[in-house]
Amino acid sequence: MATYGRIARDGLWDNNGVFSMLLGMCPTMAMTTSATNGFGMGVATAVVMAASGMLVAMFRNYITTEVRIPVFILIVASMVTVVDLSMNAWMHELYKVLGLFIPLIVSNCLPLARLEAFAAKEPVLPSLWDGIFMGTGFTIALTAIGAVREIVGSGTLFADASLLLGPAFKFMEMRFLPEDMGILLMILPPGGFLVTGLLVVAKRMIDLKAGKEIQMGGAHSVAA
Amino acid sequence: MKKDNAMKHGLILGAFCLGFGILIALTDLVTAKEIAARALEDKINSLSQVLPAELHDNNPIADAITLKDEHGKDAIVYRALKGGKVTGLAYEIYGSGYAGEIKLMLGVDAAGKVLGVRVLAHKETPGLGDKIEVKKTDWILRFTDLALGNPPLEKWKVKKDGGQFDQFAGATITPRGVVKAIREGLEFYAANQAKMTEVN
Image (cartoon, each protein chain N blue to C red):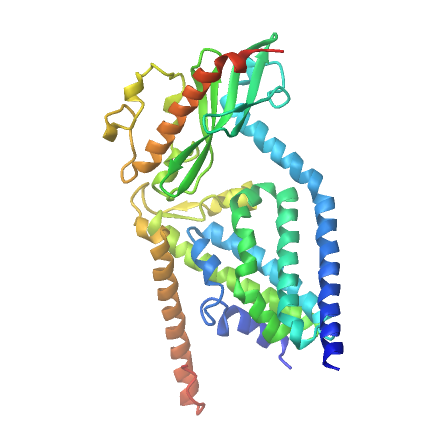
C-alpha cells in the first residue's frame, strides 16, 4: 500500500508523467507554446484525472478485467465531455483559449495509464490523491516546458495569463526580449521536442546526482 | 459457462455506457442554455466590431438573411438597419492561410465600403501569421474604408504579388489569403447588392 506522501512524490517528481514516464506527449507538444497554455491544459487534465481516478476506484469491484479498457476510456471520455461543456458554459474566456485542446485529453495516455496502474487496484481516496498529484505533476511539466519555449521563442513569460486567470494575475505577464527578437523555432513544433528532451535530460541529471549520494550510503544504483 | 461470462461482461459494459450516457445527457441539459447564450454573446461581440453601433437601430442578428455564395454555400448576412434602410452588412468570409482556413467577419456599408474586418479563427503560425489578429498588430485595420476600385482591382494583392498591401516579414501566405478573402467578400457584395439591401 502506497502512502500519501509517496504518491505525491511519485506524481510530482519521481514518476512524473512527462519527464519520467514520457506519457501524454501529444498535448505536451501541442499546448506548450506558452507557459499560460501549458498551465491551462495541465489543470484541465488534472481535473479529469482526479475525477476519473475516483470513479474507477469506486467501481473497481464491478469492472471485470475483460472489459476494463473500454470502461476506462468511457469514464475518461465522459469526464472530458463534462469538463468541456461546463467550461464552455461557465468559464467561457478560458474555453476560448483551451477549448480546442480539451478533447485531446481523451487521447492522452497518462490518465488511462494511471487508471490501469493505480485506480483499478486502490481505494477511492488514494486514487483521487494519485489523480490530483499526477495531474499536478503534469501541470508543472507543461508549465515548465511552456515557460522555456515562451521565453526563448517569444521573449515573454505568462503572456495572456490575465485572460486565463483573471485581471488580478496581470503582474505575472513579463517580457524579456523585445518584440520579434525570439527564436521562432522554439514555438514551432520542433521546439517542443527540443525543450522536452532537454528538460528530461536535466531531470535525469538531478536524479543521478541525488542517486550517487544514496549510492555512497550503500544503496544500489537508481540511475535507470 | 463461457457464454454466460460474455453476457456478464457485456451487461457490465452496457451498464457503464448507460450510466455515463445519462451523466453526459444531464450535463448537456444543464449547460445547453448557457452555451447558446455565450455563443450569441461572441457573435454580437464580433459583429459590433465590424458594424458600428451608430449605424443601426435594429438587431442585426434578428434581421439576418441567408444567401448562396459563389460556391453554392449558404452565407448568413447580418444586416444593420436604420430607419428601415440597410446601412451596413456583415458576413463571414474565408481565406486559405498557411495552415488551413482563416475565418473572418467582414462588415461593409450600403455603398460597398469596408467598415471593418476581424479574424474569427485561424491556425496560422504564432509569431508570424497571427499578426492578422487585431490583438497582435493593427495590420487588419488598414482595410477599413477601402472598396472595390479603391485601390483598383489589380492592386488588391500583397506587395510581393504587385499589389498595395504589406505582407509580414517571414509570412506572405497568410496576408495573401486574407487580402484575397476580403476582395472576394467585396465581390460577393457587388454580386448580391440588390438582394442584400432589399428590405421586406
